[in-house]
Image 1: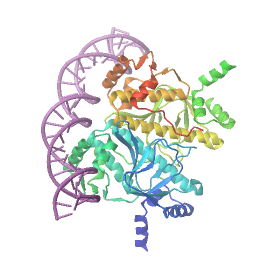
Image 2: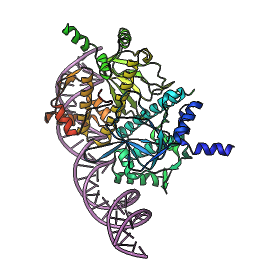
Image 3: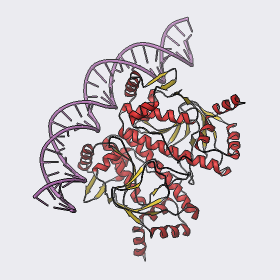
Image 4: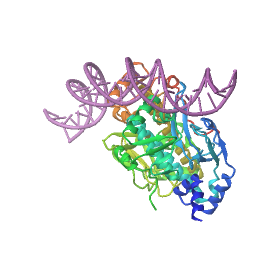
Length: 239
Length: 239
DNA sequence: CGGGAGGTTGATGGCCGTCAACAAGCGTGG
DNA sequence: CCACGCTTGTTGACGGCCATCAACCTCCCG
């Protein structure tokens, strides 16, 4: 019974995240489970949403990593933010919305439609909280790019990803599956691949992190966060 | 009659902006005018909202410039985005919100409380559109910091400010009142004051802009935007 | 008159971009 | 089976953009 419960949580990181944002009622859970049974897969490197096109539906990421991106004329790519299981795409509230950036699948991404918020007030609250989180992550990204050095940008970004993965139960003891390439890290941090490589090497040599076989481990997250002056993301008062 | 109308618009840039986002109904206008009569002033360099504190009310900027900021332990300041007349502060939808950054008055700022969105569906829509704009500006800021050179960052930022001031009727023919110091520009662009000064000088010598007596003029906005590969912010389909 | 805020300019140095080369792994197809 | 190309990671040499340090100016205001 207990084991079954744990397994259910482990296999639905998206639900874990939404429940962590705000406890859901049965109507919300039912609607979510129903949509999750009609999940689809977007293959790696393909686009889930294109900049400048109308947003016609809200989507929920169930598995895999995506990113909000903008492509420059010279071919440079900027990653605005990462989208992890439990994150929403097209989570707007105004009418006739148009996407202000593209959303690209960084791995194969399993996703489903997100139920309409009017079905449940707790679901609407979860969507609102998710929007607030997303804004906080955008602000963190601005602070990284504006004021941190290359090494700090990488460490800070990895700590954010750890924090977010913990929220949906995909990280434990600072360790998590890490599907990003150094190229993607460069696109996110505004650095070049070469320099990302050097700085990652430095973090490894300093024993701040280990990274092998697609798994990344931050040795001492609390200590690293302290060194960076980084505090956990908080969007609401603790009830 | 015409003159009176123009003057009314000119003295209420905040209303001009909100109406530009979405046409308001009479209930919304009445509520706004009523609150605007109870306007207050926050003196320059003072804080309108502090990072980490609960957000208890939504505010509307009527006059002056503010900025969303984050202060680092070493005393460095990062400006996340600028807040102009018609922009909202604390425009959240989730419960028990906590501010994820501070809001600082860059000039003396006249502001009022923003009426509750439930008073009018058009007002709620305006708030939602305003949120979408703010997100678009955050993304633009990330792209600037991540991928542009110092000169490009400044030019792109000034073009964004021009676009936004046009939205509330505070700019005309590329010219507008500009209260920012080079120090503030440095805090926004992630550069040092010294380098901002050099790059502004360069833009001046290239005749891209003129700046004197607190007025800034971008000589040829369309041409400059083209050079940067910059396109106007668009958050909704044109009805 | 003194002091502070804001702007301007020059000299020097370091972080990070650029260019280049190579290794390892992997899927494809001859 | 191996050749081949492609992706990803890695390392070295060199250079440029921008930070840093410093000095000086104007303006404003008490």
